[in-house]
Length: 290
Ligand SMILES: Cc1cc2nc3c(=O)[nH]c(=O)nc-3n(C[C@H](O)[C@H](O)[C@H](O)COP(=O)(O)OP(=O)(O)OC[C@H]3O[C@@H](n4cnc5c(N)ncnc54)[C@H](O)[C@@H]3O)c2cc1C
Image 1 (cartoon, rainbow, N blue to C red):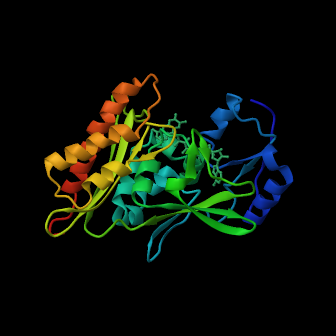
Image 2 (cartoon, helix red, strand yellow; image 1 turned 180 degrees about the horizontal axis):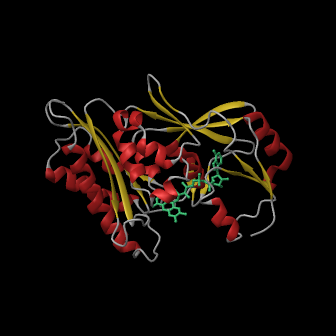
Image 3 (cartoon, rainbow, N blue to C red; image 1 turned 180 degrees about the vertical axis):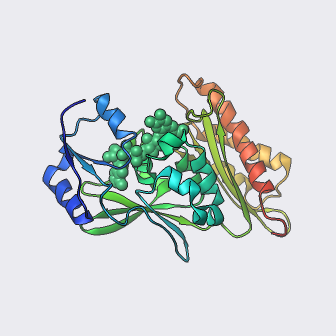
């Protein structure tokens, strides 16, 4: 690993001062689970590393009238175990429980994972399906970015110079909706998904689809929202035939990279299969009487 100087600021003002001072020579470190590997592999070679651990107020989970505000420095384990998250956003708790191993989840943070922009990560599809946003903070104030727009390209996210991610806003799931996060793991239980899908579905009294969101991971350079499939289902009866027809459209939305988890063709086929299962399971999770 290259030599670097480690800074441990205790306030956001100090963080912004260091980012001003060192610019492109500096990298933020949260849990370090991604950054340290990238530094060892020399994919990232900062002369200055700015640790966030001693900055206060970045690891709280708060209930707001709109939903939950999750501090950027909350660990994946903290989110998985939070009573508030479990009660108000069970999809989020379930998704974080599916990340890697407790050893990783005890270190990795929600903010670090989102900024890292690895398209194989679990949390983005579920958070996008719920309509979550990232609060990006600089010395000029806050900028709220819908997570759907945060992911630009492979490991490239919309973080402007001088900014850090300070919290994630996750709205309540729509009333009477059901949701699920599926992670297709044909290799080992602690692997990244070969294909992942989050679905949130709500229905009208007459059983037609009121709204649906389908977001896939591991099948492109960013998380992918399958809008054509959603449009095909919204307003239609939630029959097997309509669900199958909508899931088939997912194949046009994805563009997987071939790797040791499978060929692009295999992942495309599995994307359709898992999108269908996700919609079916989200419908089954809609509370009785909704
Ligand atoms: C062995 C292993 C297995 C894994 N398996 C999975 C898995 O199954 N599923 C999954 O989803 N993920 C998995 N991961 C990835 C893991 O989730 C990420 O490494 C983690 O989320 C990154 O968070 P971190 O806090 O450690 O970020 P760091 O490593 O500290 O930072 C990552 C990047 O984000 C930047 N950054 C960090 N915080 C901020 C901030 N607040 N504002 C601005 N920039 C910031 C850093 O500069 C760096 O570029 C795995 C990782 C490992 C090492």
